[in-house]
Length: 280
Image (cartoon, rainbow, N blue to C red; front, side, top):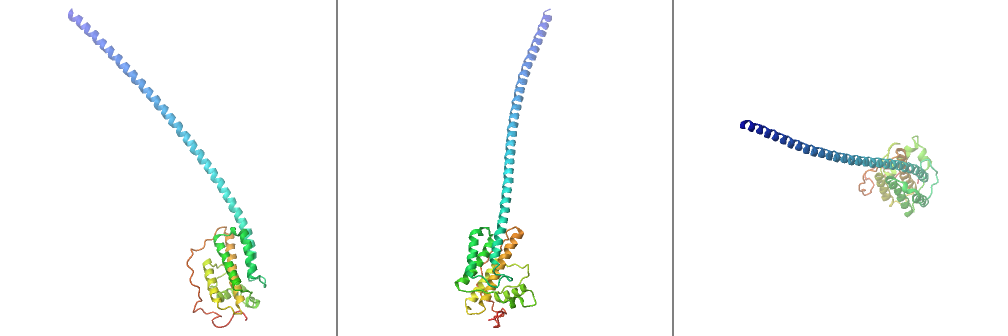
C-alpha cells in the first residue's frame, strides 16, 4: 500500500517537474522570441534609415552632377560663342591689316608709302586691334616693324623694281620675284604652297641688314629694300590667311638661337659677279 502511494507521489512529482520544466522553457522561448523580434525590428529600422540616407546621398549626388553638367554645357556654349565672335573679329581685323600691308605687293601700286608712314599706320592698327593677333602672327608683325624702323633709322627708302624686271620675262612674275629674293636675300625659292617659319625670316632679315650696313651707297639699295619688306609682309599675310582658313592657331617651331648673320662665302649671286639685277 505504501509502495503504491509512493509511486503515486513520485508520478505526481515527476509530472509537476515536467510541467515546471515546460513552463520554464516556454518562458525562455517567449523571452528569446521577444528579443529576437526586437532585434529584428531594430535591424530593420537601421536598414531603412541607412537606405534613406543612401537614397538622399544619391539624389544629392545626382542633383550636383546634373547641375555641373548644365554648367559645363552653358560654359561650352559661352566658349563657342566667344570663339565665334573672336574668329569674326579676327577676320575683320586681318582684313584691315591685309590692306595695309598690301601697299607692297607684286601687283600693287608703283608708288609706295614711306617707311615712317607705313609704320605709323600699322602702329595705329595694332593699338586698336593688335590684341586679336595670335603669338605667331604677332611675331611676324613686329618683324615688319623692325624692318621699317631699320629703314627709318638709316634713312633707307624703298622702291618697287621696274616692270621690265618683274613682268618682262617669259616666266610667271611670281617666279621672277622668287628668283630676285634668292639673289638679294638668299631665300630658297619655294612653290606657291611653300611657307617660311618666323625663324627663317628673322635669319634672312638679320643677314640682309648686316650686309647692307656697309653698302649704303649702292644705287640698287631701294629695290633691295622693297624686295625684303615685300617678302616679310607677304609671309605675314600668308600666315594670317592660313590661320583664318584653318580656324586654328598655327604653332611655330621651338625657337633656336639665331646664328650670327653673315653672307654665305661660296654662294653664287649676281652681286658676287659685279652685275646687278636692278639697273643702276
